[in-house]
Length: 320
Image (tube, rainbow, N blue to C red; front, side, top):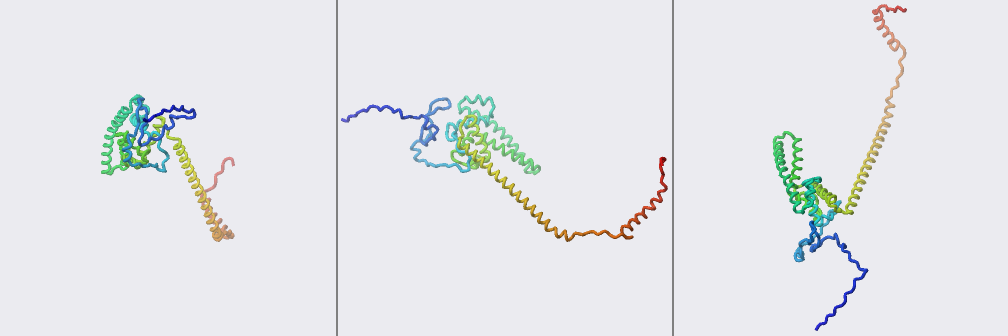
């Protein structure tokens, strides 16, 4: 018979220390589960929904962000719970703006209800935009066929593009925001690739990303990361230094060009100086002769004499 001997428990050493927050904020593994609280304060498990059997048949891929990016992925973009909260706040801001009283009352409700109410508001506005867009398209087609006002055609093109972009986002704002954040920060896609998938323009995608990040920082107090902020400051300083260097280089080129032109003008003037000296004519006064100065004086006197004879005697004043 096997004998089992139970050893006494060794007391914990005072030098050992367990930090409960040692792995807080670490990236979630593909197969993992973490105890957390939801928006209502209830305890629950957060998991990617992948088990080890499914992970064996998956293909892993390491995504590297493009080198030209000024920002790294913020903390809320790689956390599903924080990402849901940011998307709901962004949709609410799009539906009501920042200073609405209804928006303040919505903050105490669950996320699902808040999202449905905000999406309903956006879809209601999308219906009005659709009718306006139809009228603009009809006017554009009429003017395009008649070719009567080219200036109005350009204005209609800009209006139609802007209303179409708003219509695409307002129909499904949560889906658009979720795809933009997921594709940009998690898959490393560029803005023009995301714009092609959604039917938008690349500047619009970058604008929406900037607005969402501002909402996450100002309203939800998420940290965008000191490293990326420092990287942005360094990048802007480099841009300013490059612009200043280019401006100084252009000023130096203009100064050199002005000096060269002054030297060319001076050389041309020196080259013309001998020619001017050769062409210089020295005037000699004509001799006094009847045909010269004296003759001209006599001719003038003879022309003036008949006029004085016809004038008559002069009348003197009484004082004389």
